[in-house]
Length: 145
Image (cartoon, rainbow, N blue to C red; front, side, top):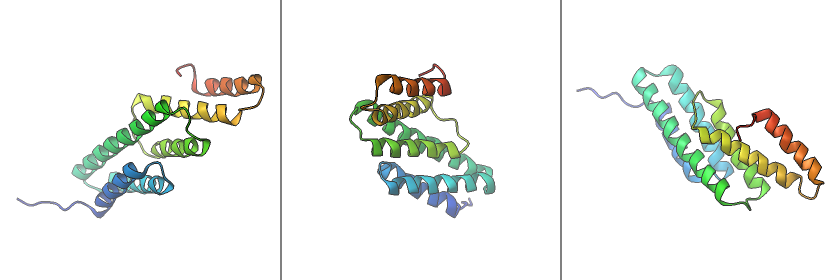
């Protein structure tokens, strides 16, 4: 039986995504995520079908885990500071760079993060101004929040 060695970009993507999962709350973790996702894009374009399937499975697994961790964090801690919310939003947006259907809760989590950012940014402003921004968000995303 002949075993095909895993392509270097797939092995590297696996390492980067593992580090991204462990460190997603840091800039370093985001950098690992972006690098891992870029490597998986290479695998999707250049590898044989077996490796493309492995790449898609890695993408699905790590995106679900990281996004679920963010969802739990955002839903469970109303006191997350603005810089951390902004970072978590960037992590969620990183997955938009790949062709992957994410779980439905990811969209809701993005909306929740942006809503919280609006609430923080408009703290101390008249309620009407904050409400206008929230209505604009609703107009952008629809009423499925």
